[in-house]
Amino acid sequence: MIYYLEDVRKVYANPLPTLIYFAQEIHQQSQVADAVQVAVWDHPETLERVVVESNETTEKCLEQLIALSNSEKHPDVVEIDAGTPSIGVFEFVRIVAVARILLPKTLIRLAENCAAMSAGALALCLSAGANSAFFAGNMLEAMSLRPLDVTEHHKKVHGCKGDGSCGHCTCGKH
Image (cartoon, rainbow, N blue to C red; front, side, top):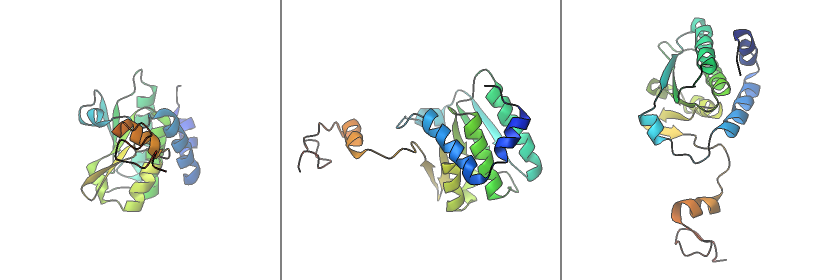
């Protein structure tokens, strides 16, 4: 799909809850649940950086995201940087949501300087489609926005057969 600036401006102008909802829908449809993303984080084939420094650069960020979206191959990872001084939290969350909408399969990570944001701001960014954010020296990942099926998790991780033999769950011991 080819995006144009006037169309993206309309998406960007949606009320923030609506924009986050659209981004979550696309995230759930496009991101593979429980995918191992570590190799891509550490050694992406293509990494693009989007720096959001002020409200004046918002338009430039949108143009950069449009160019990435309209390119033949989307980057593996897009890092969104809050810049210095950073823009308001809600404007930053909007940029993250638009990035998710325009680049549905790309991993979106927040730059390390975003760790200075509040926990609530980072949570909004993860809700808006960011795959990772730094908080208190740790990388938080939004691997899947779908509810975790504990039984499926035990089957995948521990080789659970549903009979309680794995020793990690209570299945089969009811």
